[in-house]
Image (cartoon, rainbow over all chains, first blue to last red; front, side, top):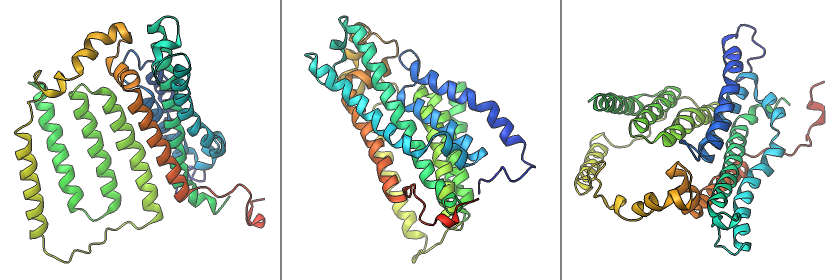
Length: 148
Length: 186
């Protein structure tokens, strides 16, 4: 279904994908780390990043995308994001604050809020990216399974 | 003025797409139209100044879910099977009644952008007043989602993680070790 490599006629899709991929991933990172200032955040960044990888997989084959991002390493990443989020909450608990009260993370409350938001958004982004790509692989890795 | 025009065009687009989705038989076309529907919704969210929601709708609704549905189509069939045992009158009556009740329900709702709406009276003034000093990030949406409602967002991430675990449990990957070593390519 997605074996574009075997057909030499297909030129437009690989070229456009090569052209767009860096910008999609860069935009994902921008939405991730600029979420404090502009629209966006971890969830949006995660899905944008994952859609870039899915575009790569649709153009160059799921097998290549799987060697780029092996499911075995994506599964721990999906859990890592949630754990990072929870760890920020527990850390603020241990620093004499409430659960997920980032103000205590730094001597300056506003700095603590910035740090906390950055970390939890990173956790959200990691989990969303990993889960989206994993779900895609689970759907599309199947017909390749018979060949590999 | 121009915003009203864009609204009308996009909403007409939504309605037309929805009607075609209901009537068409080919599931491939239905999936493509559902992607177009999501894209038009994303445009509506941009008009409503909810750009981050529009991001999500465009990427997830028009992009990822379209791809996943196409994958599902490859695993199943391409034609819709109709198994309706009654005429179109009963469903039409049910839909009309439900729609009428929903429209009737909106009469009690505050107008769009009404500053006196309950949603703008409860905690919103406190967030708007105190978040520049308390949280200090310029994007107030982020300060609400990530800080004031950090607990909710933690729950949402857990839901996404759980959904991923559920999909992997149902459609998961086989173990790395191949069961039929002779099938491996040379």
